[in-house]
Length: 188
Image 1 (cartoon, rainbow, N blue to C red):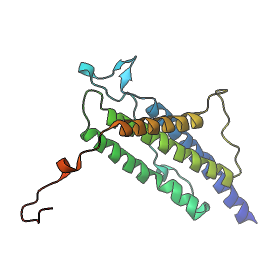
Image 2: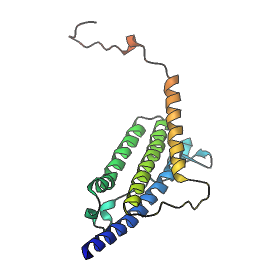
Image 3: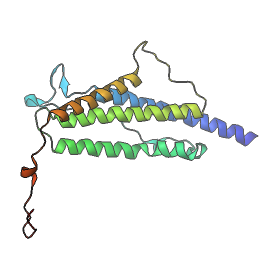
Image 4: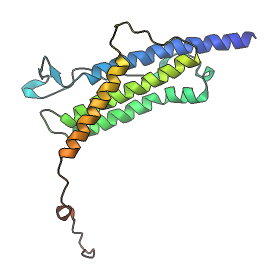
């Protein structure tokens, strides 16, 4: 009986601590989603170059001194795999920036803003699961009508619509110009 009570306390403590870190990450995602590379409506970098004005949030659950084994394995896995998902997203953003055109770096900013909207929503989902597991109340709204979760969802949808609209207006590469002649290969 004493072990069960101790395990429940460990789980509750873990949930409170981890949820607070997940929520901070989501707040950081909101800031990144709002970063369009400008400052006061002008490009944030020198010479009219758009550059980031907000650092991306970080989440390192292994620095938290909690008993991870007190969680169900699927929930523990979801939380502990988040840093890898962040690394993967950051590589994708970096790759977009490597092949993007100045001064706007539109693909880089699209990838960054859309990616962190999606990542923020993933953190929201996992925080809700952890709250439910530990019987914690939902995150209260302290800003009245505004909801960070709805903001992230709305922005993700908006970025996807912008991408889809852009792709619809792009002309496909004509098949003839896409043909590559490989020496020694049969013509055709």
